[in-house]
Image (cartoon, rainbow, N blue to C red):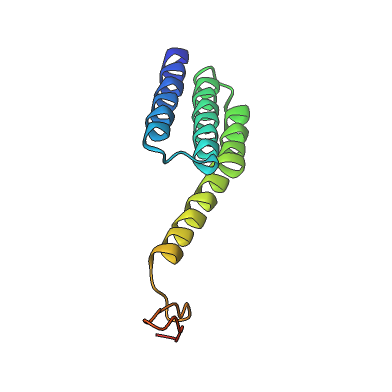
Length: 107
């Protein structure tokens, strides 16, 4: 199990290097990688605790992992999705349409 967590960590580091080479790595992606890795480690520990018959501790650790790590990651992903939709679409209230004489008029 420990080898799997270390391998998953190296996989996330490799993905971050790959994104950095393409110029698409920003701080929100780094934060998401960290949150996903910590969540995976906590889930692995909760399975281990359940295996050694410490169900109460495993259940509370799983709840904490879900609330503390997975929920912020999902919120950040939704925020990123809305930002990308807002930047890459032409919304009716944007009103950015340039003519030859540099006038702006609503669409």
